[in-house]
Image 1: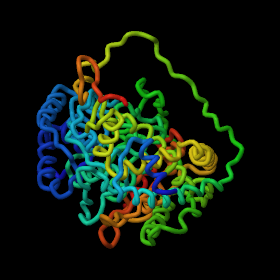
Image 2: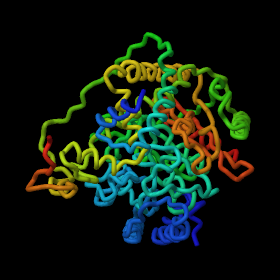
Image 3: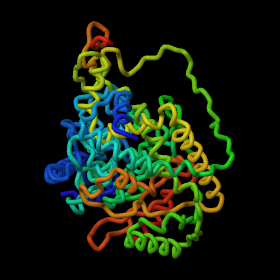
Image 4: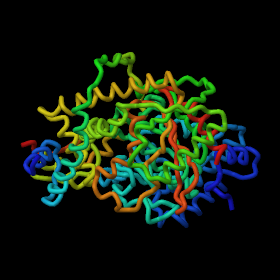
Length: 90
Length: 466
């Protein structure tokens, strides 16, 4: 792994790192990945990997919620009318 | 003056019901301790302004005949559990001014029970850490030695109980975040079976591992809280109603292959002494081998950051939280997330992004799930032979601030607590005395899936010995 890889991952994760942080994260990543790599050599028995998953539904009924649109809107950092407001996308 | 530091729910509720004291008295005594100690210990980020009003209401509940054990009991809540209308920040700058818009399931239960919510407990940012050094609001200090960490991530919750700022508290445990600080602060901490307690209204860190649980002074109090907060909740589809049956269980498995290295000699000696004492109470011990479990921490540091990077992607400054504007929307995301998140949070998001990226997904994430299944199976099988698995809670007593500079060294302090989260099984840490430097020791018991009640029984037996 190189600094460029850290920069690419940071870009994907929408995170900024200072030059100093990049070096630190690179060195930490190498240490952590070196440790977790041990699972590569683990021989796992041939077991069923599927959990017995099932959908949990509720009836499609209108229910009164404890919270309202107004309560949620109060937390918007920026809004206009009933919409969140953001900068241009591109 | 009421000695909150040594007061249990059991004792306090009897005194409240007998009208020897009022909830206002209890809360006032907690406030005194907070005033005296919180400046130095930094266990609480906020003390709610209406605690005395809450206490008065609780006293009215008692006066009108409510006999519940939690009426009027002052409790501190970790800063990642939502209380309607109150700030909740997960100790992050990202959510510094965020106000919860509903009650977590556990809060609803406790509110109905008449609990007084004292305030918000400090923690590692978004519950990521083992020392509270990652809090954006400064670390919490260990009351037994303020040059040492209280453990984490529920460090504030542990210190609040250990220093008499409340009677009991709530924490969350993703890889040991209740049990390790409980051990470092000389109190009881319990992580329920996965699904035992609803996660609705708790900020998700790693959704397949997180659980809410109590931090208390003894096993009985942990059971009381657990019995109130556990149960099926339609808002968390993974929650279930656990069986309430208590069976007498007496066979303890000890995974000797883990306990050979990386543990302080005195911690191991204390562990062996506790095991000997349990034998005198009629317990049998059996040396067991858990070959897959030693990979738990490696599995954890793949699955957890993967889930963290996904869960924390919602924090982009659009719908809530901190926003710092850039040129474009994506610039704003980056600036907000970088200003809002501390370095450990960003490191784990990047690590999670890496293990989930094309080309590495199979080698890391998929393989980690396979090993996780093998670990789950391993526990299922071993619990056909033994009733409990015991280890020290942590390989050391509380370490010093700044001692673990390398993140991997910090992660290794959770080596014994992580397997219970990986396997989904319940686990409890019980205090077992003090080192010659006056630092608390703790022992960890793990039980089969959904046998949470058995843990309280064995924990009470351990308490008989201290």
